Image 1 (cartoon, rainbow, N blue to C red):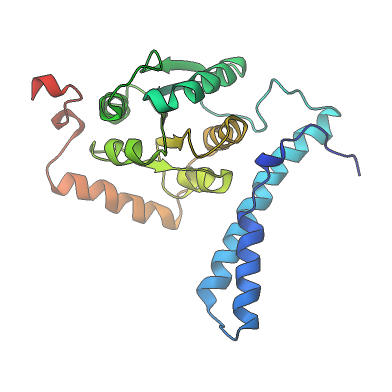
Image 2: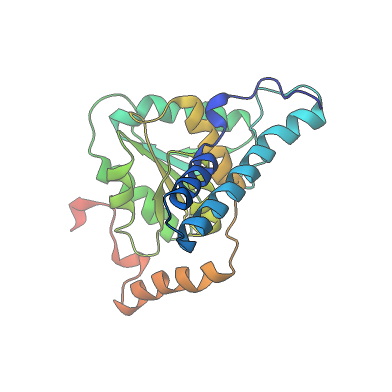
Length: 236
């Protein structure tokens, strides 16, 4: 079998291994919990899918091209924004995505000088809700503040992801239009893999459709629309 050279070890997901290990330990301890086994199966299948996406391009091409993403991205126009903590990672991801042929619209910040992350998150999230952009990436120290803020905008589903499996499921199961990253939590190479995986994934529908529809309906029940959320605090 050809050896896949040049694959970043950080891109290999451990969630599938961890899930199976947890299931085996639970059975060994006498806990026959079907939900644990189902979680392990889902994690293992997701991890195998990610590994396949990493390995097959290298095998088929003979030698991997390090300037290309490890998975084929389906979106060619992406919004990105960060506070000062995520500035360096934002710039690295911009370079990475641009090299892959993705048009990147930068919502700031423009330097490592301190800014308030809600200002960046609200502007980008509002454009997602208004369908001016389909996908967005938000970066701060942990990714938590950006996710909390973006999810305040009706119609937006923002998911923090620090591994490729979570990024994939954020799209396939949750139809998340925004992924948030923590520049103080993950290294740039892993961030690139997470973003590539997220951009290559699409909503699968199925049983997830009913659940996502309930989230959408909750906004509608409150009578809120994208136009009700003003990204500029000065106008409120």
